[in-house]
Length: 360
Image 1 (cartoon, rainbow, N blue to C red):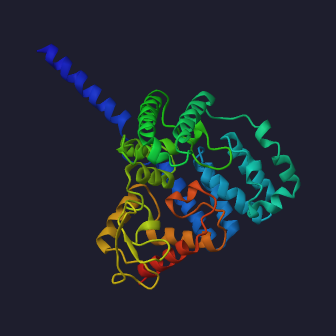
Image 2 (spheres, rainbow, N blue to C red):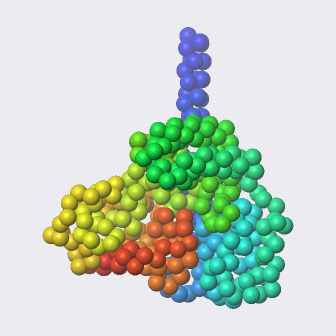
Image 3 (cartoon, rainbow, N blue to C red):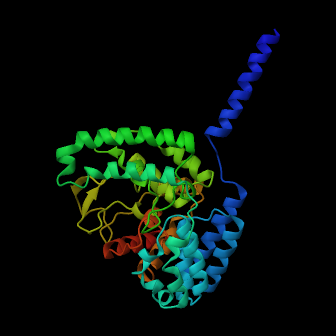
């Protein structure tokens, strides 16, 4: 009888241990406070209260030490246009620890004043003088996988001529990445850094591209959610990862693609995967985009709330501010953190029309 009790006891311990290590259900309190402050900072930006935004960013960085690159980057730019070049230098130094070369940002208009200051001159050597905080070996392995991912994709007619080879590489990359996550942890900014000329995570293309034209190799959704909840991945980036890795881009979290339609206002009806269904002008508003059903909008808002993202209406306001005022910022849409510039005029009309619908 005692043997059965011992076995039962061990099973309970084993199960509870696995539950704790495999799945995390929610953000910790410090991370929630961090996101709340970042959201308030971004709202201050929309209201063009830049001093308030900088104060809120600083408060967030004090609460949560592993601040995300996107927020450090935004802070550096806002500090620059506010003439607080010492703060810009401070934030760029933090980004340099993650692998970003500040010199790669010299073309950004928001940093013009900074580069002409004494702090800008000091920042030119930040990359070579700043010790890196990431795992160099892990980062190099991820970069090698990224290069393998891109090798055949760069070639002319790549998907037509080399699809089988690309698919085989994607499967190999996924196997290697899953083993790395198991042994080293999720390839976060702190573990593998960011790209040399931006704030993109090196592992992004591997997770996104494995959902290729031959189908998805692996569903990373739960791994990505756990990374977000544990603070290894910014919530906006996590939402983009999930949509890209599952082929549901624009259909789960992203306020940027909630309204059915095409970006060039050509009145072509597209499904969620971007495939043309039919040409039709019956269901379109004046900009060429149909209104989304309330039931889908409510579901989308619940999905966004689960990752502690702002609601769709506020996200679109941030997008419109970014596109009309400072397109170099990375606020708003989940994928805005992956690029410094999104200025297509039709995309602006798209968001403006959607926002007016939500405000009715």
